[in-house]
Image (tube, rainbow, N blue to C red; front, side):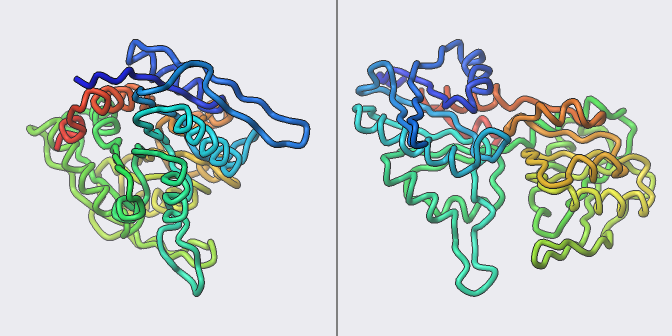
Length: 329
């Protein structure tokens, strides 16, 4: 076991989530100060010694009603830099939802590759490691960073929940809402099959999707869902249009029920209205993004906490344990 003391910090926006992580670690959040000046500039500093210690800073990077994603990112960068200057030996940024991970390639002339710029910023302030959950493009995430990266997957979390909801005799089809998510859907299908090896193995299907200038089209279903419970799986929900179209395709293909699972529920634009009328029996997401508004707006929404999962990851990283074992690899 490492001789470095474990310290966990969380900026104010993620303090509630971080408290759940600390509860599972039987630890307390380390104190810090967040001060805003009259001109809008801010100062963030630790209120305890961090010299020589192993630090984990929890901040999920998404926009909400109080702060933009850029506000949250800038404050995180300044705090990480302050911790490095204060003598921390190892600093890990824990971001359940990592901003700009979707902008991982050039899709139009002179496009930015923003995930690479984000990586450079985090590294510049002295970050040793970045931990995130179900990033949009794993290869792009891993290639963007020079510092250490850890990628956690919510596959087992979702598979356990779905299997408890289904009867052993239920016939299941795992459906990717687009071609790009087929690998994710296959991993989920295998996790479901492993939980109940005596049941009929789930089948696979996917829905075609085309996106141009933010407009989504196409909903042809490839694969058989007739008489099966269709489980749609995606890494995130933004406007909800992709899941709604995929659910329509599954119903048209004869699915007896439709569940949808997604790790990150951003619920932007008219997502509440879109998903409320979509033919989805239940929508399952994690608390990587705060869902205070959604909890009272969507009857079929169920939120799984990923805090215990992140707590296990932090404990293994602190003690130099195996993340591969945690992921079942």
